[in-house]
Length: 209
Image (cartoon, rainbow, N blue to C red; front, side, top):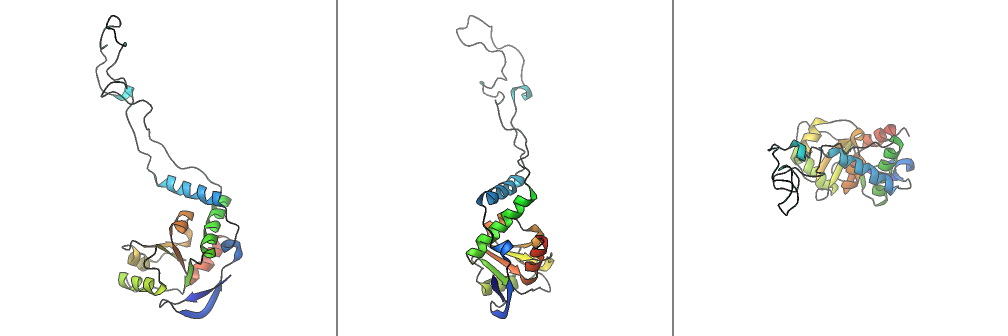
């Protein structure tokens, strides 16, 4: 699959780059995407929710009333879950929501997500660019030129670039990642995926194509 390389003005440079079929044209696995996204979202959860059970409540241990003769149900503790202020039965406890996925499945999930984006023409390739310093105005200008300013866009770099990252950090519809940080969730969450030219080769190297 050949795709034109654009410049930061949004015009074609006259050059093109190949998007290899083994990454951008695989048979998508919806279940692999589901599992990888589920793992990503699970890892974002702190899992610190906690309620007190009856054994953790501070309260009197005195028997509330005599066992027989009251005409009501027997009760032995004010900390019982049936009373106001008592412990909670089967309440939430701290836990880890993460789970393990095989490396091959996670690779398939990312390839499937990229294949969906390629199929719907939601992948752009722009020539490498840089800023002398954090320049949000210049970053927005590039977004406008590429016609992605009003869409949730993901800009993929081959390596970390502090100036580009800081220029995009304050924008709601833009996110900058390196190829090593690329995840299935980020790909699917974005409407447009914008690769800089060097990141295409870096992604192929990462997948060992």
